Amino acid sequence: MGFPHGGAKKSNIESMVPPLTWKTTRRRVSALLPYDRNPRQMSKAQAKQLERSLRKFGLVEIPAIDLDNRIVAGHMRIATLKALGRGQEEIDVRVPSRKLTEGEFREYNVVSNNTHGEFDLDILTADFDLDELKEFGFNTNDLKLNVDKIDDGKKTIEKVQCPKCGHKFIPKNLSP
Image (cartoon, rainbow, N blue to C red; front, top):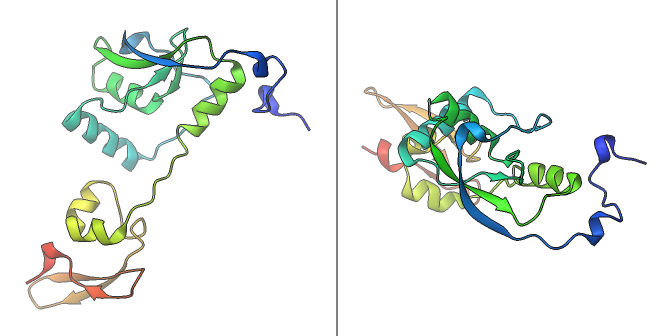
């Protein structure tokens, strides 16, 4: 069975291309071209988190482009920089040593966005309070926490149950 638009299956030509190396160089944000078939999408909440991160920390994770300035990875970062009025700014980008084959381009475009990390929930909940984690874009579902609401007469306190051990605790920012 074939793959639409050329698919991710390697052709004989792709198996003969030299290995890739990447270097960092600089390009103007406005010169970077979005890939018209980029499947990556973001929710409004994710876009807001990305904007917050770019404002606070700048561009830390640099985009990858092909030799023709077509964006392979980093579409959302580039779009957000443009929306923030930073289109004339020069930024670091990663560029391959040779033109990517269409299969390589499409594969990396998807693979680079499909790295869902796992977190040690014990460390997260010990080092950050729930308000901080929510500010970072997490919610109780992301953290796999069971939250009980307790009304102590003054405020509602969220009591959390660890999904690993079942221990219930009040996060440090809500402790009396």
